[in-house]
Amino acid sequence: MDTARIQVKAGNGGNGCISFRREKFVPRGGPDGGDGGNGGNVILVATLGMSTLIDLHHNPRQVAENGGHGIGKKRAGADGIDCIVKVPAGTIVRDYDTTETLADLTEPDESVVVARGGIGGKGNARFKSSTFQAPRVAEKGEPGEEREISLEVKLIADVGLVGYPNAGKSTLLARTSAATPKIAAYPFTTLRPNLGVVRINREQNFVLADIPGLIAGAHQGAGLGHQFLRHIERTKMLIHVIDLSATDGRDPIKDYEQLNIELGRYNELLTKVPQIIALNKTDIPEATANLPRVQEYFGNRKIFPISAITGDGVNPLIQQAYRSLQYLETRARREAETTITFEHELPPEPPARFELIETGEGFWVTGAEPRRAVLMTDMENEQALILLYRKLKNMGVINALARAGAVEGDTVQIDEFEFTYSPKSMQSH
Ligand SMILES: Nc1nc2c(ncn2[C@@H]2O[C@H](COP(=O)(O)OP(=O)(O)OP(=O)(O)O)[C@@H](O)[C@H]2O)c(=O)[nH]1
Ligand SMILES: [Mg+2]
Image (cartoon, rainbow, N blue to C red):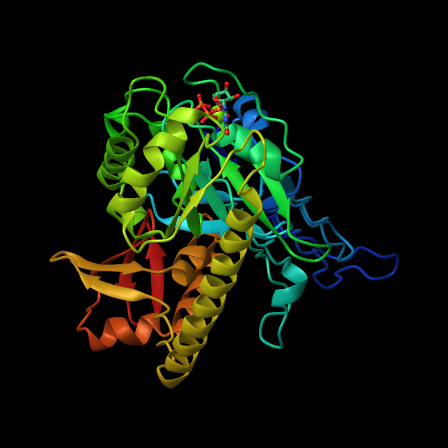
């Protein structure tokens, strides 16, 4: 339920209308066809209080309303209503085919348009001019965008708890927050990540995530942990919980090393995430016995012996986690500021409106603007083709063709349509 694949279809623009005024005593009135309305967009909105994509599994196709067609008396069609799709905060949105990331909706109410509604076509009233008194032409509505997207929810926690099964991660989460995860004396008690808010004082807090225990081979799918490792990819920091009592016949130092190897095998970057070491279950005598050896192993590195059950040592651990977070956030802000200054010096180049590609048989025109102009043209209508020619000319397409050496009779392809080039007009076929 953390991932979903859905189809989104924005509304088509409504068609412009071809109509002429009819009034008593006015035998041949002017054009009065209204514009089509714009199609609705499909918009994803990050929503607080949602945690899964289960709703979308039941509704894998999300469609926005089409714009209404224009009608006579210059009345415009209504705009189509947007389709609003609620997703959990922390959802990454990708194009399914290209896998390009479209958005990373981290903050509540952040939104992204994943399919843009088509523009309504202009009615014939718009095309009247001194030389064009009775235009029998209107634009078709632009088709709404349609695509497949994939969604993935990654929890947004500041700090993640990692450790072997049974180390006491859930117990620590329960002790430090209001969360009530399941706790039991067998491995793999936790089956899904849990989040809790750890309050330092009235204003200061951070979000702590507990994930299922990891074991050797987790990166290859052993145990349950690997499917949840991606949740901690985005935490700023980890608390590595180690069972110091080693009651299951294990060794705390081996556990520590093995777990880090697993993290690195899953994603090298995870080994770069700062870790705080929590040595848990100090209330058990075996733990106290193990402590000197483990302390020696970590040397100068700061470690936190705790008992998640009694609460011993937990407060210093939490304070340290919070201070480290603050440090990391300040550093991230400083880096962000540096980046912004840099970007100011290098303004991005404006995107080209279209591109001309020589095909050997003629030319291929790509780009959103020419494509839109073509899709909004009724190819059966002579006047509409004249209008298309003018639009292409205004965009610079006709000039570019001439410069590229196009001659009468060359084939020009725009989107799905083929035209025959002539310096003064375009003919569709
Ligand atoms: N004595 C003692 N027992 C503890 C302590 N912390 C956890 N436990 C016990 O250890 C067992 C496992 O605790 P959990 O919190 O469920 O461990 P976990 O790391 O979340 O385990 P998984 O979810 O299976 O990965 C439970 O029986 C806890 O009561 C501690 O500080 N002292
Ligand atoms: Mg647990």
